[in-house]
Image (cartoon, rainbow, N blue to C red; front, side, top):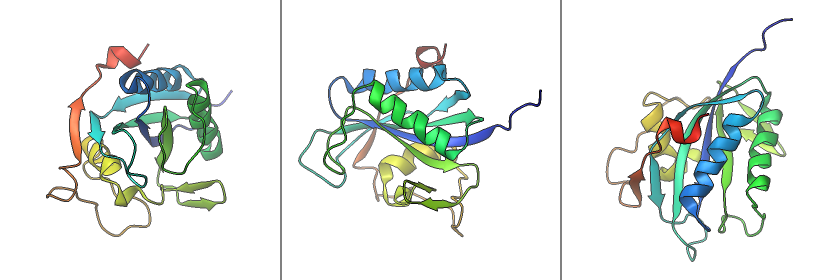
Length: 173
């Protein structure tokens, strides 16, 4: 039986309802326990002001690098399964949520379908995505972009504050 091809995927996770720290940790544990998904590395956790709908609690956000043999739609299903298991109810766009799990990058894939766009279409606009992503992958170059993203200056650091970091033993096995 042949070995399945492994893909490198970066996921953005966020939470601003309930026990935010525990929500993110639970999401990482669920992902890591899934068949065909392994969490390899997790950024620091950043506390961030809301984006889009401003009248809601602050978020905790992180980026996780995972390895998977799932195709992009299989990985999207995994993300939605995590959200559902933790009780996410899809309501107001950019509104409050127990947990949000988004595919940011999937190898060097560029994909645009009704239910899935890779790389994530708004990731370069969002410091709460780019700061933790650049922490994990400083030389990241999203497919289709001719320049490396940078958030070194005053652009977003006032709104994106490093809060803490999980130990690998907390989310892995």
